[in-house]
Image 1 (cartoon, rainbow, N blue to C red):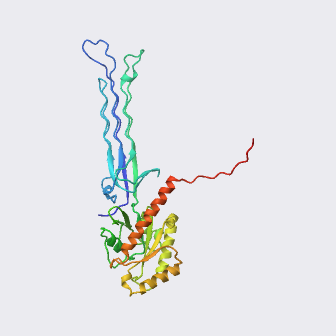
Image 2 (image 1 turned 90 degrees about the vertical axis):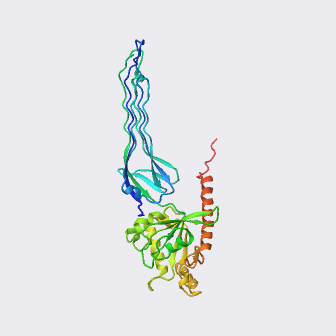
Image 3 (image 1 turned 135 degrees about the vertical axis):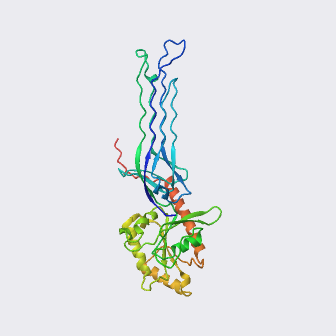
Length: 359
């Protein structure tokens, strides 16, 4: 299935039904009076999160959605039937903005979460509301109000706990296929991955997390080179970045340390906030080098970069170090979750200077 992360749709809520101008007509009742009922409410349009979706491809062909109108009121004070609301299923991580103004309406991040994007029109008032002691036969009614109509821009930013970052052929797809049930395309040429792949890493019965394989980035990605500008945004929602470094690149003149610096520069250009995320160096393809040489080469890169953060040496093909890596990642995510919950429970309070007491 083709990965689509942006779509433009139009939504139209239903109009409210008109109020009724009716008078009571019954045998043996000489002065019946008004009995016109109100119109029904028009249907509203909601976006609803669905964890079973991971792309906006459904909106490539169906781009217009309209809720039913409310029915008009009738005699005997009968209110018209309201139009049914409609829910449009979208993947988690969908950001909704109004296309004309650019105003962000909201985002859908939870399964079953509903976001109102077009409010149905209110039903009109029947003439029964306008009777009085001086106006016993009112003919005034109020028509139903029109429903909202909007052009919406949908943008998907994948929801994942961990993002895999690196140059093409760094081993990202091989790693995600080794630690999860995801089966991305793996080949010995650059840009094998053309769209993000999500995989669930299950540590045990109660612990799991989502990992995202982002297409390989190259120098100039923030300016649109390669596929970077299209998918760098998907790293913004991750909580931890694993920067994969190829210890056995296809070309002998490739410098792993220089590649790390280039990607750091692209991240800084695209969104400086990406540099604030926890990031680990993961040296891949250790099985392609003789024993001891892989660790020695990794240590050289760490020294050249002056890297003081966590780093690991793995081989996804040989499943060497991958289980330990996922265990450490799971533990780190739990620590980050504890810190976030603690920050919510204990918000920072501003400190004000003490003022001198003036009796």
